Image (cartoon, rainbow, N blue to C red; front, side, top):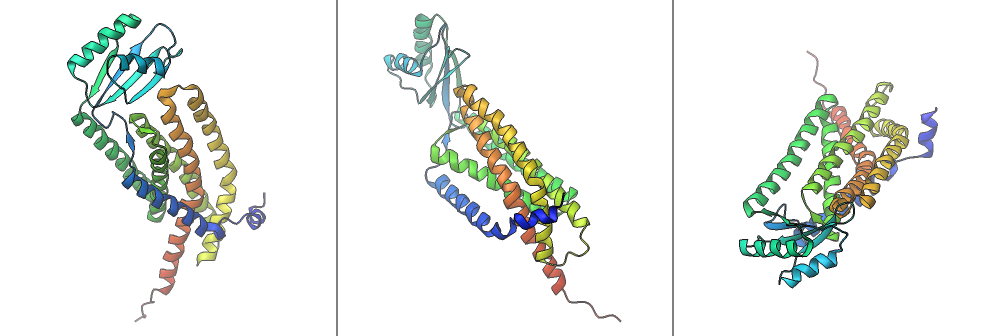
Length: 307
């Protein structure tokens, strides 16, 4: 296959500024939204109580909410779980008292014949979970920089980590504007996306490195741009096919996985698409800019006079 001919048909490089402006605008909007609206943190990161009501038949969220309201309690959120929607999960921001918990258990035991399961997250536990979530993402990011730097070079590592933060901020932006609950499964989704995105980025970088070996001279921006564009064309079909396969699976999980997995699967779908976009149009394009500037500095470096 003649990739040189293909690169004359598709030129990703000339649109790099549009990609940068588009992503930069999204990141700026995300930062503004996160600092104003903020995230809808679930009880995993705030003090609260989750009550699982087990019934013997399918129920609706309205029925479960109505039972709680008959006790003078208003849940902050009610979702359904189980194969037949036989589990009603009510969440309260802020811990319930022992008296309220006992009253709830007696009430639902009388209504459905099963004692509800009660789990409480204290403020201390919520802070620890939030801190551990941030630490886990940072450790993953540092590990990725080290790995990519060792396998390729430092400029690849910088480009890859910028693309990863782009993906993470994009997901946070959507979750902030839609006010979807952020919980532990969401963190698991973010880490999954980070792993997928870096895998896609490494494949692209590996193709760039291989194509660089076949170039007789790489002295400036045009030379590097030609290699990057050729590499993007060669990996484009592979990246699209891979992300579509995973998105179909995540989409099925979103549709059939139940309410409990809805936020997790939504984050996966959005993150996978963003990860593919950033691998092709942010990481590779940013590396092109950084590499061309590095080559320019080398050309402008004064040659020492020979003795």
